[in-house]
Image (cartoon, rainbow, N blue to C red):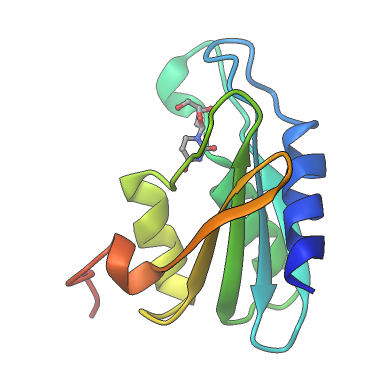
Length: 126
Ligand code: THU
């Protein structure tokens, strides 16, 4: 089950639009209900207008009715091990919890699994 999230993240990275950074990022998320969604980063010539793979995946989840994020797999084809950026930690926090598991992946599988609480302690919430 976890391995399929890894595969989805790798396949999502192959759809990245990343002509500027040349970092192909893919993310797959699984909800508490077991639904899965993936996303890639989408860059723009006006650099700040691009967005992260996590954002695409969350958008897919929301358009399918939403959910609570139980697990996330993150992959970047050009990095040994990517971790979600600060903004995406906050975005994941909106739909997850401190117990949400974040799998940091390379092409072969999961390298490390950490909680969102460890990645974003004292998250902003209200
Ligand atoms: N990127 C992601 O897609 N997710 C992250 O958590 C970190 C960064 C993307 C955004 C941009 O397209 C590229 O990586 C370089 O910052």
